[in-house]
Each structure stands twice: as structure tokens, then as C-alpha cells.
Amino acid sequence: MTVPLVRQGYHPKDEDYYVILDVDFKATLEEITAAYHNLARQFHPDKHNQDERSRKEAQVIFQRIKTAYEVLSDPHKRSIYDALGPEGLKLDGWKLVRKQMTAQEIREEYLRLQKQNLENKHAIIAKPRASFTMALDASDLFAQKDIDDEVDDEYGDDSVAEAFVKSIPSIEIRSLSASMAVENSLNVDHSMTLVGNLMTKNGTGDGSFGTIYKYKYSPATIFNILFQVGRGPVLTAGLSHQINEKTSIHGRGMLVFDTYGVAPGAKVTLAHKIRNYLIGKISYKEGINSSVTTSLIYINEKLRFEMTTSYKLSKLNQGVSVDFSHRFNNDESKLIVSLAATTNEGLAVEYGCETRVFEINVIGAALSFSLQAGVTVKIRYNRANQEFSVPIYLSDEVDSGPLFYGTMVPLVAYYIVDRCYLRHYKQLR
Image (cartoon, rainbow, N blue to C red; front, top):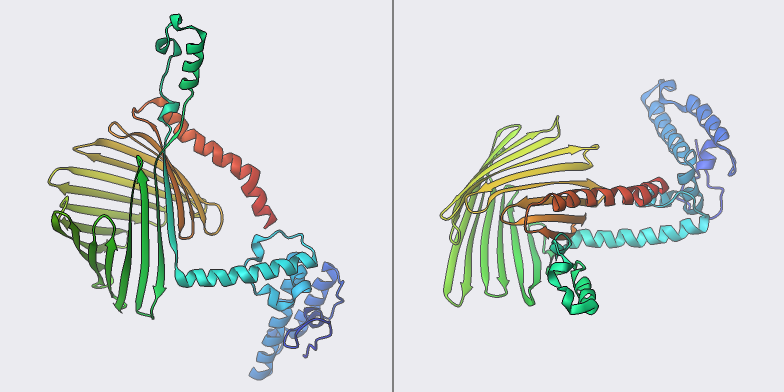
């Protein structure tokens, strides 16, 4: 079965799906379906069992017929094919655009997607990672103020008005921080990553710049060296080794240089898969804030449930923590609950949820509270390797007001955005 090209504007190597199905360019869906069924009956491989050669030829022809039908029976794919030919269908990103487009709009979108795919390939090679954190202080929203207590009647109406203006809650920026890392692959086994960090808090700034060299000695062994300069030079050397299928070890040594001298440090972590559903870890840290930490990780894939318990012992403090996570909504969403208790800070509780809104976009919110740290809600947006987070400090006391609004406001905000924008956008795709 030969399928010569008859329509103008196609490269000779392309196949004309209309010719393959023997239908007109303006054929209806019913005509396309009828033509497909007719050809499928003729060229189905099961009807050509005379010899192996005939069967293979029938398989090739039937696959071409099936491909042509899958494209022409889908209005969105058909409009792209009519405008760009088979090559246009090979480009990623069409499922993200609206389906009702003219031929000119499809060609313009094709050029845009070509450029975007090229930029994505460059980004994959560079592997950039970036994060930005803005900490806000909104405790003034829940502070109880009484104008009558601040201003006595003898000061008159002007003082009352001034006190009223001062009583309006304000939101302040506590701190800003940003970090970025760009990886440069030297070859298959060697890579160099440039990292930078900036932070400002209470009117003062700090930052650092460094480079990480990583060497893949074998599939089971990786070396890395970090040299960082900022307030003081820092030199770190690390090793990760997979001992066997169930056991791995990670080690890191550190030298911190400052005006007082050199402060050495080291950390070693041993991980072992006890069962298919249970992983154990033990870490020893020596140097500043020396400690020993043991952890057990329980994973139940059937229930989409994960629990991590940890116990940390140091010279000045000891504590235990339990973290729960449950995946739902076809693994697109995750519920998180964390409990931590230490001898210095007491009990701390955190709960939250995150969900994937698009392929590489994740949004989440979590509320944490304790007697020592007060109440804080954390908003997070993640797109691939870029992350934007906003911790909002609500109150220094654990009251019902901050807990209620810190829980409900993110939920209501997501519900409104989902109803007004996300669902509509997904339907256009």
C-alpha cells in the first residue's frame, strides 16, 4: 500500500493521513470512522497469516492506518495536523493550549513551543535551582488594642483620630533570603555547581558564594567538595557510598574558618532498609552542636501512607519527633502532620497540605504552633526547581483566632482560585 503525497505544503518525507484513509480533506468524523473500519478489516494482521513476510507488511500498513485515524478523529490533533503536518504533532506542549485555535494561531503557537522546548533543553542541561523566602510579621492583626486605653478623653478628638490610625494593623517584612545554584557538567562523571545565598534581616545583610565539585567514581560512590566564602571561608568534603542494595553510608567533613581560628566538624549517616516497608537511619554529628539522631521510616504504598519517627540527643537538648504524610487524589495531593517535643522548647505541632495544580507546579500551606515560637502559617509555591515560600508570623501566643484564620484563609483562598481559574484553565487544555 503506497501513500503518495498530494496536498500542497508538505515535505516529501511526510505521509498524508487523508490519503492513507482515502478520505477528502473536508471529510466528516463519520466518514473518517467508516473509512478506518473498512481499511482495518482489509489490512488487519490477523487476516494475513499466509507467511511471516505478509504478516509483517500488514502490521506496518495497519499501524499507519491506525495512526492516521487517531489524528483525524481528534479535532484538536486534526487542526494541528492540517496547519503543520505530522512534525507539528511531535512537539510537546500542545496539551497546555486551548483547543479552539485558527490555523494561523496554531502556526504561531508552534513557533512559540519550538522556542520554549529549546529553552527547556538548555535549562535541563544547566539544572538551575533557585529559592526565595520572605518572612512576614502579621502579629499586629491579632493584637488586642483599645483606643480608650491609649488615649484619655482630655486629649481631644485629634488625639483619638491619631490613635485610631495607629491602631490599624500593619504587616512588616521580617527577613528576605534568596539562593541559587547552577550546575555545569564537565563530562559524564564530573560536574561543577555554582551556588550563592543572600539574606537580610533587621536592616543587616549577609551572603555567601561557593562552588561544589562532584565526582562520580562509580554508580555506587560519589565524592563532592564544597568551598564557600562569606562571613568566613568554609571547606566541606563529602562521600556517599551504596554498600549494597539495602545499605548506604554518607559522610561529610567540614572546616569553618573565622577570626577565632578553625572549627572542624563531621557528620556520618548510615541508612539500612530493614524491610520493604521500613528504613532505619542513624546519624552522628561532631563539632558545633554535637548530636546523635536515630530515625525509622515506615512506608505503606498500598495506603499511600508514610511515617517517620526520630530521636535526637545532644549535649544541651534532646527531643523526639513524629511526621505523618498521606497521599491522595491520585497522588496529586499530600496531607502532612508533624509533632515534635524537645526539652528546651516543649511541644510543637505542624499540619498542612500541598497539591499539584499542573505538571510541575505545586502549592502548599502549613500551620505550625508552639508555646515558645507562637503561631506561624507557611505558604509555599514550587515550580520544578524553583521555590517561593512565605512564612507569616501570626501570634506569639497560641490562641483560637490565629489558629482558625491560619487554617481557613489558605483553604478558602485555594478554593476560590481553583473554582475561578484552575478548573477553567484545565478545561481549555
